[in-house]
Image (cartoon, rainbow, N blue to C red; front, side, top):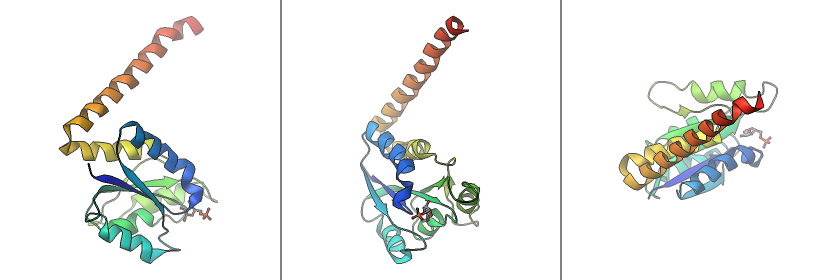
Amino acid sequence: MRRVGIIMGSDSDLPVVSKATDTLKSLEIPYEVHVYSAHRTPERAAEFARNARAEGFGVLIAAAGMAAHLAGALAAQTTLPVIGIPCRGGALDGLDALLSTVQMPSGIPVATVALNGGANAALLAAQMLAIGDAELAQRLDARRRMDSEKVLEKDAGIMERL
Ligand code: RP5
């Protein structure tokens, strides 16, 4: 199976990235994590993205906060799908990161998830990989069923609490 490459702009983004790695682990999807910054290590970030397809990656996830250019900078270097996670923090608490990640110019798409949306970034990456992987698609279906059952259990219990 192709790996998911996860890049974070700083190790301070780790709590958000951990939600993505936990989700990928639960779906038995291989991944590799790096700290590369669009601003502090632009060459390393670009080199990683340029080589990613040949290195066996299928999807890239980029987590960054503040003036978050990481997802876009990676997307500029590869035609692999890139998923951006804008991270909360800084004076604007993530609004800056959200707009920097989502407002890509036509031609270089980034699929942007919610602020701090590590789990959804991993699920979206899994759904992309599952296009060509029936077993992974089954694991995703099972997870959806489990999530539904949890809601129904809560529904069954709610009348007793109110
Ligand atoms: C961004 O700036 C990083 O992705 C991080 O979210 C934010 C703050 O970075 P540090 O100052 O904590 O390294 O580039």
